[in-house]
Each structure stands twice: as C-alpha cells, then as structure tokens.
Image (cartoon, rainbow, N blue to C red; front, side, top):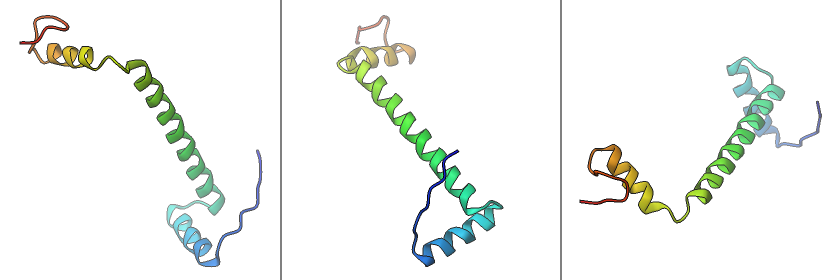
Length: 80
C-alpha cells in the first residue's frame, strides 16, 4: 500500500471529516473509496471508447439490427 500527504484547506478537510463520520468511515477510507470510484469510471470510459471505435462506421448495420429486434425488418440491412 502506498501512502501520500495531501494538503487541503481546513474548511475542506472539516467538511470531508463530517462526511466520513456520517458514513461511518475515516477520511482515509473516504479517499480510498473515491479513488476506487474514479479508477472504475476511467476503466469504464476506456472500455466504452474501445467499443465505440470498433463500431465506428457500422451505424446503419446497428440500426438495422435494432429494427429487426423490434420486429420492424425481415432481415438485417433491409428497411421497409
């Protein structure tokens, strides 16, 4: 585990301390949860961007699949 020192304005630290106390955790645990959330969000965004890149240029095929799933098309790529 890595430790680091963070300087915060006193009023910010006091507010964080209140939030942590309300949640039944320490300020350190609050930051750990915050960091874990930020990492998870960054990973999810990276996965989303990778999937979007793989699908680039295939919008019409995707829309056709959605229409087919909704029962609007007889076959992929066909429109009424």
